Image (cartoon, rainbow, N blue to C red; front, top):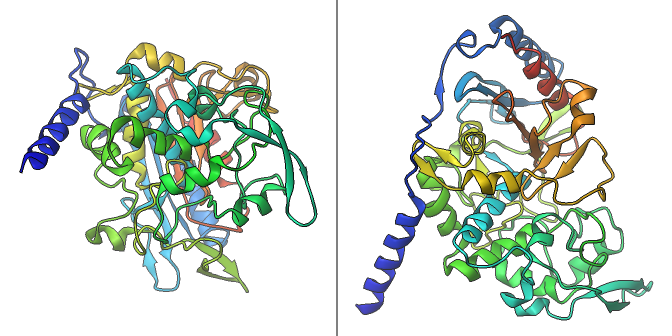
Length: 427
C-alpha cells in the first residue's frame, strides 16, 4: 500500500511540474480565415493544386497538409488515399509515423529536465549511463567483421548527443557502410520495433560499440537522441512514454501523439506505401515492421524515431516554440531556454552552409533565407523517415506541415510546399 501512495504522490508532483502556469497566455491553435492573419486564400489555393496534381499523376498516394500563422490554422486538408489497397481515403486527422520528428520532442524533454537543474549540458553522459565510460573510436574494420579501436579523445556530453556531434551514428539506415555491419551484428536497432525489447537494452548495447569519430569533431546523424530517451528515463525515474504523456502531451493537448496507439485510434493510422508494378502497395516487413505502432511487444520507446502523431498535434508542439515555450498559459520552457535551443550549437562543422543546428532543430541561416522560398533567418525544421516534413518561421509566425507515409518514393512536393506557403504571405 505504501508503494502505491508513493507512486501516486510522484505522479501528482510530476503533473504539477508539467502544468507550470505562465503569466503569458497564448491561445491554443484555432481555425481562421487566411486574410485575418495576412495570408492570401487565392495563393494558398496553389497548395491545393499541387497536392491534387501529385495524387492525380500518381506521384504520391496521399498526404495531409497544414498551414498556420499567428496561432491560426488557415489551411488543413487531406488529399488522396490513406491506404490504396483497401480504398480508405485520407482524412486530415489521420495519424502518421513521424519517425525523426520525435527527436525534437525528446530534445525538449531533455531541456525541461535541464531547466530543473538535474544536470548540466556539458556533463558526461557516462555520469548517468555508466556504460559510456571509456568510449572508443573505430580505427580499422577488417573483412571478417572484427575491428580495432582507439580511445576517444574526450567524453561524450549531453550537448554532443543533442547536436549529433557525439560520434554515435546509425547502422542500417546510416551512410557509413562500416557501421551497417557493426550495429546489426551487435543487435543494435535503428528504428522502432515490434520485438520485446527496451530502449535501455538497445542503448547499453550501443555503448559497447565504437564511435564514428571523436566527440565534437563532426556532425553525424544517428542514435544520439535514442540515448537521450533512455537518459530521460534514468534522470526522471519514469518510462519515456509516461514522461512525454504527463509532461508534454497532456499539458499541450496533444491527444493523438503516441509511441503505440490505443486500439481506438488504430484505424486512423496511415499505411506506409511504395509503388510496385505501377500500383501503390503496403510497404513490406524488412529490418523493421511498419505496423509497429499497433502490434508487437510495444516496449521500445525510441526517443529518436518512435512517435506517431497528426498534423494538428505537431503544429501545436511547434506553436509552443513560436510562443517561446508557452501555450494556453502552460509553460514548458523558458524564453531564455528556447533562445539557447535555437542558437548555432555546432559552429561550422555542418556541410550545409545555408543551415546550422541548435539543440533540437535544423536552423536557417542568412544564406538559406537569401536563396528564397524557405523562410526567414531562424526558421527551424526537420522531417522523418517516412517522408513527413515541417518548418516554423519565428519572424513570420508561420508553421507548415506536410505529412506522407511512403518509402522508396522520390518526389519534390515537400520543397514546393514550403515555397508555396511562403509565397502566400499577403500583408
